[in-house]
Every structure is written in structure tokens, then in C-alpha cells.
Amino acid sequence: MSSFSDPKAISDYAQNALRRVPGLRAVHRMAGLLMAESTPADGRVLVIGAGGGLELTAFAESFPGWALDGVDPSADMLGLAKTALGPLASRVQLHQGYVEVAPKGPFDAASCLLTLHFTTEAERYRTLCEIHARLKPGAVFVAMHYSMSDTPGERDLWLSRCAAFAIASGVDPEQAKTAAAAISQQLPILTPDQDEALMKQAGFSDISTFYQSLAFRGWVAHA
Image (cartoon, rainbow, N blue to C red; front, top):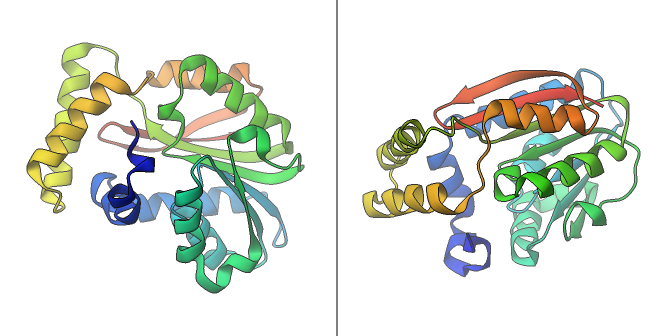
């Protein structure tokens, strides 16, 4: 999946994400509220997979005292985030690279939305460990990504439903179907049980689901 090096895909990222992920803006609101349960008004929050700036903007607007650190491997996507943030960018530090380039913190909370499904099981575990190591004890962690049954017929059914949702939201039908096929073939999607097991192994506890829609699932956990 190399779309984050495609100029057209980058420029259309925000619009496409909102069309493809049911209730994405609500996910951002929920993630912010979940993190705010234990994050002080002047807290520091780590955002992994911050390219595009959708959640950074949502968090910065809703919680004006938070300082945010956003990490993403794509310079172009970070540029898009900076543009999306506008005057809010002064409260955000952007870091190009993977989780290892993130400051050591410790952070009051962290999010990783629509990102971990790009990683293999081993990479996902390593990423979760790196996030955990940067959080204060008891800090909230919020994650959301593709996560579904590994039964081929059931997985294909949910991805076809995702394509139907995208089409109903205005995505070109052929593009939506092609994307669903590519997701099925190229993304190392895990089952919900596997995702939760990796979080536990990385040190997270009190893991619970806060969002489930079509092929997507979101969790809230504590370091």
C-alpha cells in the first residue's frame, strides 16, 4: 500500500478517509474524550500516524491546553497535517519517522488511529511496546484500525460492505472495489483477539472496545 507517496492520494486523504471510515469525526471526538478522562488540561499527548492532521486538529481544537507530538513516516503527509492545523500548528511538534523517533515523554496519553493495520504482527507488537514505554503509568491509549475475522469468506464480506459504504459516501465504485481487494491482499489485518493479545503483551491493561463499525474496531486501554 504505497498511497502515501502518491500526490493525488495525499491531497485527497482527508476527504477519502471521511468517506471510507464510518463516523470518523465521531471517533476523533470519542478518542479525545477518552484520553481527557485522565489527561490534565495542560497535558502532553502523543499521536502516532499523525499524517493528514485530522485527529491532531480535532484534539487541538477540543483541548486548547494540550501540547501534541505527531509522528508519521511520510514528509508529505506531515506537510498536509501542518496545513490542516493552520494557526493551531504552534501547539504541535511534528516528527518524521516511525514510533522510535517520538520523544521519550513521558506522555499523559497517546493515540494510534488507522495506522496499525499497515504493520505486521511483529512490527505491531514493537510499536505498541514503544508507545507504552513513552506513557506515564495509567495513561490512556486509544487505537483504531481494520480488525476482523480471519475467515476468508467473512473477511471478504466485511470488506465488500466497506466498499459499499464508500460508494454510498461518494467514492468512485471501481476505486472502492479496487481498494477493498488491495486491503484484503496487502494489509496484514489481525483479528480482534490477536490485536488485544498484542496490547496485553506490550503492557497495556483494562483493554475495552469503544468503537466497532463494519471492518473497523477501536480500543481504549491503560499503560
